Length: 332
Image (cartoon, rainbow, N blue to C red):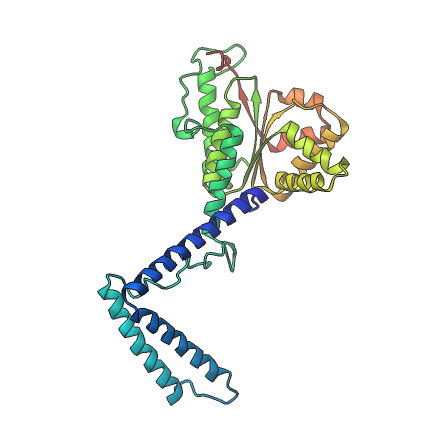
């Protein structure tokens, strides 16, 4: 799972702010309780002293038996101090661990990383930050959700040249998109091609997919075809170090995210570089087993006429085409 660098930085910053907030609250409570009961400060200092005594024995250069009298004496002193400390805290209305430094996530100690990689706590923050970024980019609203999607805005009357009415067609399209998102990445269809005219709901459904897959904790990148091609062009031709670094980050996120949603394919100029770039993105992601949703006003016949046979065969053979038709909903 590979999140965008910006998303990761924001999530790690939130994790650090949470840790700092807990530490400030613990420090404030410690200062308050020390003022109310000065003996607590003495007990904490004495307990730190027992730990120092154990460390000196361990590094003193002579063997010390773990069950010997020296260790036993330190342990007994520590237990007596702990007992007195617990009683004082209880008298102040607090538990024995009220002043202990405890991480919010015991799995990773609030670092965000564990033995098996990214911890669930950091993954959750990444999902939240990613959804926030997608919301700004897609202008997502609460309405862009499968549970709130309405089919009654589509006509239930027969449509010329089609076996289904626009409403019946959209019921099938939504069923596939919802299954793809809610069962991601295990849905039988791995890549989708949303094709059809403007104002028929392709971007709306893309937003629903992005929201649901992001909620499930997977990395999602949504961008227009024009922006994607511009990033690859900058990576190839720029001489500015800062622009090149940003372009490298952008191209890596297009290739490495769990789900890429590429909007408005066909709006770009069809240049040899654009052809090469699109093939690189599609082919690299297919070989890596990563999932892609492409939205376009072009039909498969128009894609075949516009792009190379190699690219057309991959999209035509390995993407499920979902065709949108009906009246432009924006006019309604």
